[in-house]
Length: 324
Ligand code: SF4
Ligand code: SF4
Ligand code: SF4
Image (cartoon, rainbow, N blue to C red; front, side, top):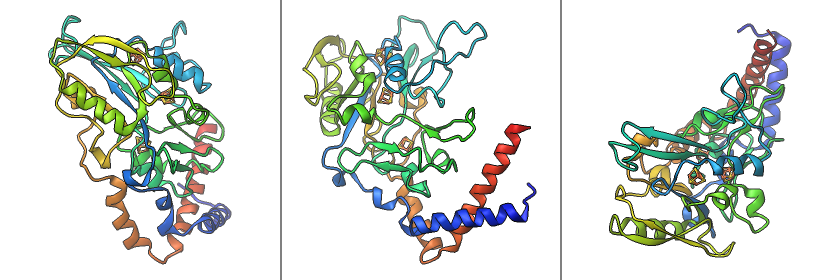
């Protein structure tokens, strides 16, 4: 990459602005903590054994977040995104190596819903150099400020779940991801995907209640019918229950401990790694990287000035590549 002197100086100026926004050893860190730091953690329990793959949650997500439909086929007849993208914040995928009669069995098939995990100690928040990614101090929801985002994509690299997506198709691309429908939650509502889910597979509520509900399910006798709450377990909307037959659950809650815990958690009858959920340590990546960052940046301003220069120049190069 050839860098003109004028571009470099502009970049350094951008870096200076970043430096003025915050000390390097404090960037993002003031927004972080462990689960005790959030008085009312909100999240979601996705029970793959209750999911029928109807994708109503995907439609509800698009509607609630004003996201356009996506066509991966040439006929443009159907909204059929292949993965998360800048216009798809939530996707239902399918694990399958067997017949349709063996649902939630490693020899059969299972659905899996993917979107932001709302990590309790989120590495995207830690990595963002301008605090565009942040955690709500009460509920722990991980949201972002599009106006503050400089498009550096550090959050994308830092996310252990490969969630944030970049708006490559726009002239000034920014990061996009599920924000737990924070706009609805702030008005007393719940996440649109949970409200729309007809089976209760996506359940909204306080994280503590969701963990208790997940434990209750794991203790059920497989094949026996029980009442399962639908949509919300936290009293934001009128309680509703459906009778389902208990599945033979994998004996753990994915997200209870992974990378310091996540506010979106999973139950399944098929091992989580088969569903694309990575095996991760209990310690958050943000915590591990803190030590390294502090050692490098403590008391220094120059690294972020250089970082600003690089971000600016990378942005210029990408703009140039797109024009070509
Ligand atoms: S899943 Fe990724 S984007 Fe979502 S909070 Fe965790 S680190 Fe951030
Ligand atoms: S919480 Fe909202 S933004 Fe996130 S996946 Fe559900 S509907 Fe989409
Ligand atoms: S709406 Fe519920 S049952 Fe339908 S695909 Fe989404 S999570 Fe599964």
